[in-house]
Amino acid sequence: MVNGNWEVIIKTPFGKMEIIITLVANGSELTGKINNKQNKDVPIQDGKIDGNEISFSASIKTPLGATDIKVVATVDGDSMDGQMETKFGTINVTATRK
Image 1: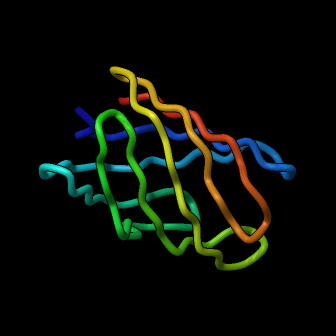
Image 2: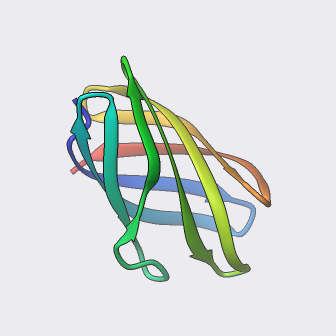
């Protein structure tokens, strides 16, 4: 259902940020990694799948410094919509499977 590479678009107050997230489902467990210009092979943590909803956390680098994130999203085929909680606030995210 969620396996594959996802191109994630994050709209921040500082502009659009693109990230590639690789996700691998194993039952209700979710693993994977995050990649972009500042982040190379950052593992996701606490990944879970519940029906068509996924959630995970990670510690990533941003232009304003390192931050922990928590993502909750709903998967519908090859698209995903959700929210990312950061120390800067909650940000809407969309993704498309590549």
